[in-house]
Length: 180
Image 1: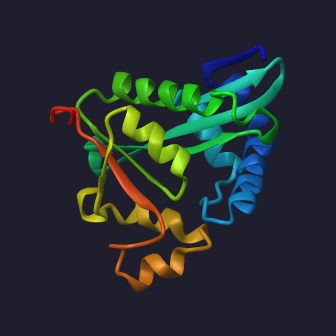
Image 2 (image 1 turned 90 degrees about the horizontal axis):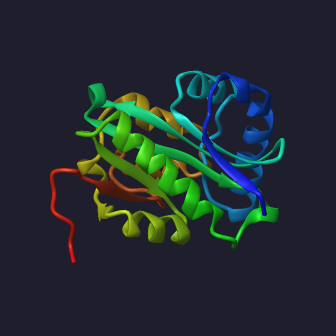
């Protein structure tokens, strides 16, 4: 495997449709929610250098991006995907670490959060110093929660007044000492 992990830029926009396809397939395979994103949205993340991309030659094999919320107080690492042919090789861990490091570099004082249904992502988050938290400790920015509308589990989130869903909220607070 000769995969390069890069901060995505405008040169990578040619991969947006494939990334959206990978997100869709991943959601189907897991049977859980991944909010759909439009190619234009992914392109904007690339143009603003708020994404990482994994490439094997010219083939996109992984991706993740950054979103900021509550005027930069919170950062979300979102959309972590790995092509099914490249799974179970540590690539997800490498991408997750790269997007986490990019988030810390761009927003050193922000709290970084993730919501996920995936055990593998929960484990990676824990390794990076995240801790499980109730949704009330995450951003209260309506635009963030509205982004969940495309998720197949959105009705659960709405039924619970955006306090519970199938996802687990996880938070890295740079001002909090790590739990040992």
